[in-house]
Amino acid sequence: MRELAEQHDGKDGRRQPDIQRGIHYDFSLLALLLIPVGVSINVAGYQLSSILKFPIFIDQIGSIFVSMIGGPWIGLVTGLMGNVFNGMLNPVAFPYALVAMTTGFVSGYLSRWKWYTNIIGTVGACIVISVSTAIVKALVTLAVFGGVTGAGSDLITAALLVAGTSLIKSVFSTSMFTAIASTAIDVAVSWIMLRKLPDRFLVKLNYGMPYVKAQEVTA
Image 1: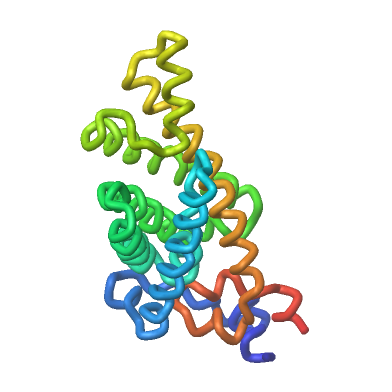
Image 2: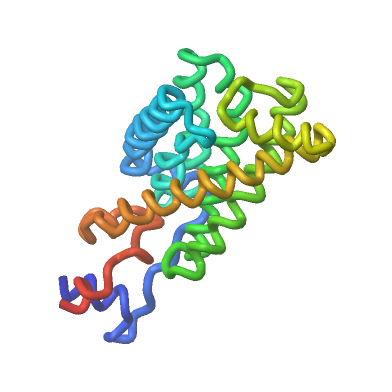
């Protein structure tokens, strides 16, 4: 543990190891083993949201969680595979693989830039992910489904249309609202899961060192 502390806080003058950049480093064996874990979490969240008819889908917890410690490419693959499995049960999920991939990819880069290491950065990450995924989701909803998918969020779109808002503005507004709500839940749950991981596991991952808990490092 002393060696871990020295590497983390640099008390012996050594610099904390930087995150190694590139696809080759992202797809380590341990990182690859995170993918089925993330996919399982995504599928469980999607099915729960579908069964309970939630107006939002909490189906990207797995993508965000593994992207935090596995990087953008692991997050992207997790999002893609999760939607492939969901699409087997509900074909509507297939086109939204683009949204899931965007979520994992953007979240992974935010982790690389260490946004998740503090509350302010985490809130900022929620905003960035929400905006990026809302744009992709709205475009998919309009281009593939004409603005209506049969999900609970269509009630929001319908209310905006009744109020006189155009279809495009209604879909984008609904996408933004649902993206903010779902991303806040996804990131919060992922962050809690991340903080529960032991340091001995985190230090083995390319993106894990920034999340080593200070109170354990200095023990």
